[in-house]
Amino acid sequence: MRRSSKKKPEPSPAALCRAHIYYEGRVQGIGFRYTAERLALERGLQGWVKNLQDGRVEVVCEGSKDRIEVFLREIAGGDLGAYIRKATCSWEPPTGGFRDFCIEYCL
Image 1 (cartoon, one colour):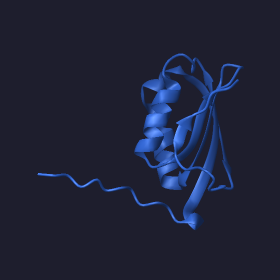
Image 2: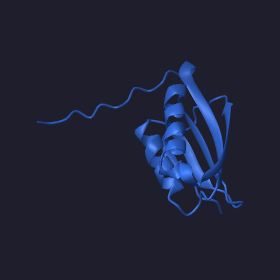
Image 3: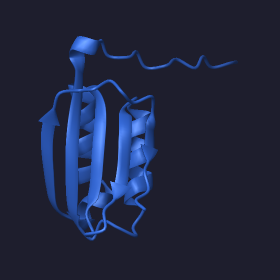
Image 4: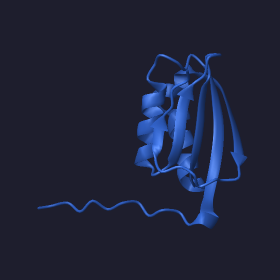
């Protein structure tokens, strides 16, 4: 029996939201970016995650508010939550400029 690969429906532009999050704590060197990327892609979010030189991790993601909130709860409530000392989230106007979710690298 063949499974159909149903793609999650894209949110309408009016329903698109954008979250900008900074995570502090022992959040580098533990697979944070890879886990965040996997969770975001599983939820159909677009954006990026990257390590910052000051030891924080920065995430920018766009999608429906419901999916973003699930993503944020999974990060805080999963294995990564034990390493997070502080998370600062701000909601911004979406740009719609992302095609997928990826890990960005600082130079």
